[in-house]
Image (cartoon, rainbow, N blue to C red; front, side, top):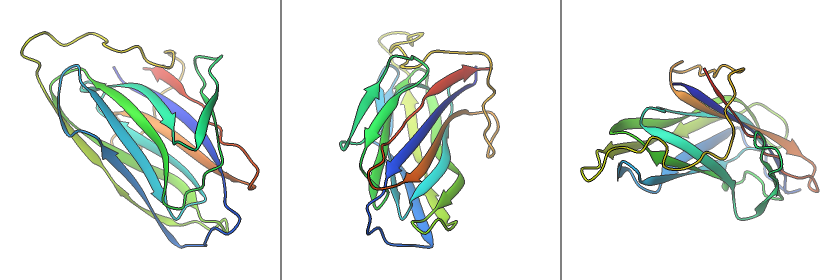
Length: 197
């Protein structure tokens, strides 16, 4: 089953942020070799960006998305709607952590967790080229028990109305992100939705 989880993130910018013409988005996993049932935390960091619209894709036959958490400068402001997560932050994208993603390993296999950038700008609102790096996670079978059907409840509800769009592979799960530059006093907003096709 293929899933899409969407997020909207808006970060406040530091007034003196430098204008750059190239940027980086990096994914790093806290563990690259795990067993079925283990938790994998992936940190998403960015450098040289004022705004970014991107997706994170992975194989949902191997990993199950659990939740996204804002960096330490942010707080979750609203969880009243299970389809949306609201996060408030004053951080910027100058060598900053955007968020961490939590997954549960649900089956043996290997998956790349990739970034697909749809759009990105610097502090001068100019388009910038983004270099991305992926994380690879290998899941070994848990020899003491069978794989759990769902070992952790997802933090977002399922819906059958939206199709995931993944320009790179078309058949992986997609976690989509859009980050919008705001004035220095603005808040960060994260909206999460998950759909099943």
